[in-house]
Image (cartoon, rainbow, N blue to C red; front, side, top):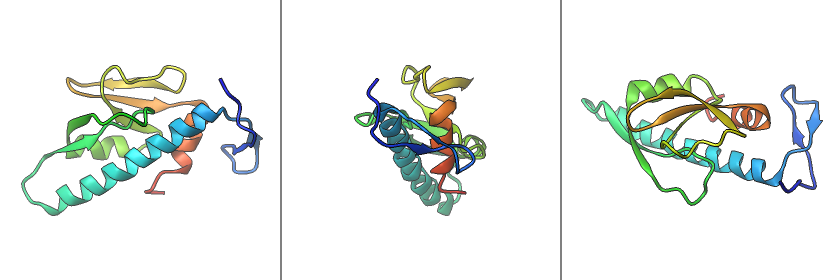
Length: 126
């Protein structure tokens, strides 16, 4: 893995740790996809009667364009933890995350280590 020339803030905000360039890019991609999904949810919440929305896969691959139908209540449950993301089956990366829930059309993963700290730090709801 390539090492980034800089450092990333640790969990407490004062500790610094070396983060690979790949981990940083993955974290930024996931945060961007999560932000897109927040807007999708807002649009669906404004419409009455719709219980399922098509969300963008929140995996680390910046080229991914998979759409995932997810019940809005499930999306809200996942978003209650800033380290959890909805991804398409097969898109999980064990070095970044672990699968915590399996559904027919999607997985819920929880980021760990540096990826988990980046996820928490970039949560638009915090």
